[in-house]
Image (cartoon, rainbow, N blue to C red; front, side, top):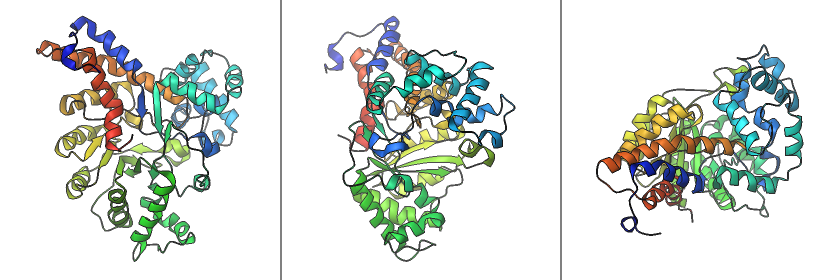
Length: 421
């Protein structure tokens, strides 16, 4: 790549088309998803019925129809999709972020977006093979690689990780720790049955045995990082099962294997249990916990995303203080253009390009199409304004400079952080 100084600088009027073109042409790494490579079988979700019954849309359907959760959850997947399509796409305009996303996916594949039912869309997706569909979908998304979420205590997933599992060069594994750190009382006996000397209160040999368990799965998965979603009440240090296992098993294992730990903080689980997966909410967390982790464990690296908008500015301030913490994404309820714009502007103003602006958090393969389309569309005016201001303040801006910054934010920051080659 030419050096920044050898190419002509851009005029303010030229900035927007160049920024937009670079955003469109740069292949992004999707650093956090719930997608799965084909060899993990039916865990991977794709197709129109899964798209339409995504839990964001499930939460909406009860606001725009007389359907009750009890009745809805008695339906088959096809019946659920038909009910949501009728309520949110036929009887109401699909103007919410989640419904508009389905429209964008259908449009990307040349399917009608205002059909009275899902017949044509179902025929199209049924005609696809998963291998070619993955390639086409990621191409439409502008994504070169995705990072999975892999739980070794998920009984449906653990058995799939055999010695002969077929790897996929576009999918990277992540060792998920939620069942270990958040749900130990429900899962310690699974480790016990596998020959690990653990007990219900995570004392005695439990921490060292969890390290042995994690070592076996690091060898099996070759993960790019470890990860855990945490409630808004998360505290550390804390004399609790989670506190003991986090310090003596997880942080120690991350140091041993030179792996970053991803902390996604701020979930309030099942505030409305009737909605099942759609029933979670968010809460403001005490980020002094994060301060303690970064300060007292300087040899650990932390990828961090917070769910509460109120925590975002505080997270940025901490990122300025601790080089072993990397903020990433606008997660879940924050993944709306109005909030993404606010948070991204704050991050650029305080961190430059030293963060990861977004991830898709996609649970359905095709969601990567609309989520990354939204990201590019939202970031184009933000970055254009950033570079216009830089020009006005006297610094020459070139296409190569823009390419370097966008590549850093959406590729090399992550690659360097997780030691990905």
